[in-house]
Image 1 (tube, rainbow, N blue to C red):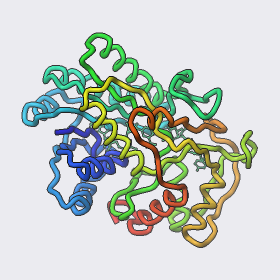
Image 2 (image 1 turned 90 degrees about the horizontal axis):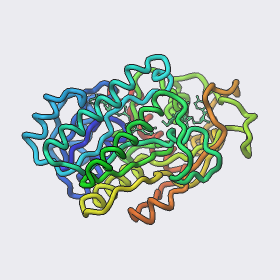
Image 3 (image 1 turned 180 degrees about the vertical axis):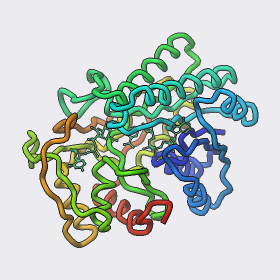
Image 4 (image 1 turned 180 degrees about the horizontal axis):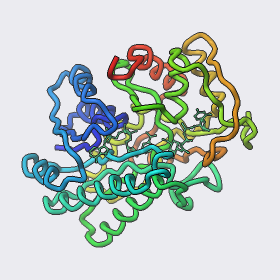
Length: 336
Ligand code: NAD
Ligand code: UD1
């Protein structure tokens, strides 16, 4: 059985479905700090299966102990973390406590139960502003905010643990910019409060929930002057986790890989692709640059392909079409 922490969140819910489709038995846990229990009902109807889920906090050792005592967990995919970059700067202790405290507690309980297969949700933000793109896994690591630091420090903790006990098998998955939703429109990203990321904001403007998009600068050193990122469809990303679990459970050694498409798209490319999907213009206004932003980065995903036999398949247009289906079928997210 595979334990998913943060299972009802954006990437967790899509990964849960893909693991079930691949035949894995899955136990999900989440404390709903940034997700809705309604995702569970949607996942049940999508998978046609009764889900195994327990509500709880990964910072709570008694909770995790009871989970491991009552279930034969062979591997863990650890999504549970807080991820709002801005909030991590205004309240860093909350981020260090939750993201590092949760990780350490989980690893201690895993060790006590002799479970040492671990898939970790890392992020391209460990690279900060990379010297060059495509970014390879051996690029310098210099996170620029407390959230990014928690990912960098989590990687360090795991690497030290591996050194102390070679029985640990860890997949460090560095995600680029996940967007899109399951093609059914039943599960998707449901950010609490005002979103900060480009895709949910474009979706809100498209649906009329927001007046216009702010484009943060068109004077960057990029082909059209707007920021360039490696957007990856969340279902492709979810499938990367299935490959990582297959890989670890087959006894292969730890690995660190970028999960991205290898292609960079600008803010204007995203707006244009979305406009094509909805058949009308997206209202936007160019404003000043957002503090902390970088001009351009995209992944070199070739190591993931070589080691996991995985590569992202879905186009930017599909990402926007699936994002729109989710948004238009669920204008207020899971509360619709
Ligand atoms: P999300 O917020 O949708 O999902 C995280 C889930 O973890 C939420 O359901 C939340 O309720 C849960 N959670 C948080 N703290 C918890 C705790 N202490 N105990 C139990 N549950 C807890 O975020 P997501 O986009 O699905 O991200 C999943 C993981 O991937 C996170 O670790 C995130 O940092 C990482 N990541 C995300 C992105 C991205 O752009 N979405 C990029 C890189 C890395
Ligand atoms: C953000 C986080 C990063 C995290 C990543 C994926 C910041 C500073 N960085 O990165 O740590 O790993 O999300 O979750 O928050 N844009 C606009 N208008 C908007 C919103 C965004 O023009 O209203 C632009 C940005 O300037 C950027 C691009 O769109 O060029 C993508 O932005 P976003 O979706 O926030 O992702 P990142 O900046 O890559």
